[in-house]
Length: 236
Image (cartoon, rainbow, N blue to C red):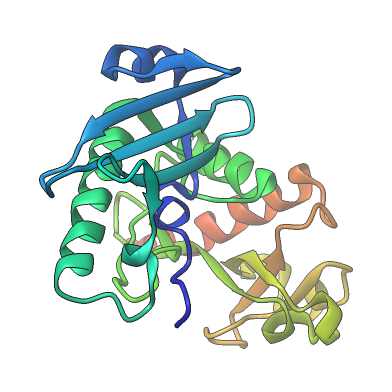
C-alpha cells in the first residue's frame, strides 16, 4: 500500500507561518523549532506538529500514547473508515492552525509573489481562485468592467516551452494579453511563449523563472490591463 502526499504539504503549501501567532496558539520552543501537541478525538491518539519558521517547513505526526509509537495508517492512499476519520481530524487541526497562525502567500515562486504584489498595488486587483479542481489558478480582473487582464497558473513546464523530461517539473506561469505590443513581437522575446490554454491570437505566457526581469513583466501587465479597458464612445 502507498502513502498519500503529506497532509502538511496540502495544507501549508504557499502559507507563511508567523512565530508570534504560533506561540499564542500554544506552540512551544523545542530543539530550535516550534512544537504543538494535542489530544485527538480518537482514544489514545495525539497530534504532534513541528514548524521550522525560518524555512516554513512542517512535520506532522500522530502518536499512539498507549503504545508510545507513531501511528501512520491514516496516511495510506486507501485509508478508509477509522483511518479516513483520523486523517480528517488531523487535517482539521492543521487548517485551524493555518487560519490563525499563517499568511497566504498564494504562489510558490518568488517572482510570482512579487508580480502578485505589483498587480495588487498598481491595478488594485486581488486574485480570484475560480476553479476548485485547480486551486493554484488565479485570475485578475479590472475593477471597472470585470474583464480579465492576467491569470497565474501552475502547469508542467513542458506544456509551455517543451522542456526536456529532465526539466519537466511544475512551474508557475503568467498569461497576459499582448495588447499594443502584439503577439508576434512578444514571442520574439526570450522568455515569452504562446499562451497556454488561452487564445494564442491575443494572449502570451511567461514562466516565472527570472528569465524576464520584474520591470519587463510589470510593463507587460500594465499593457494588458490597459488593453481590456472599456472603450470610450466617441461623441458625434
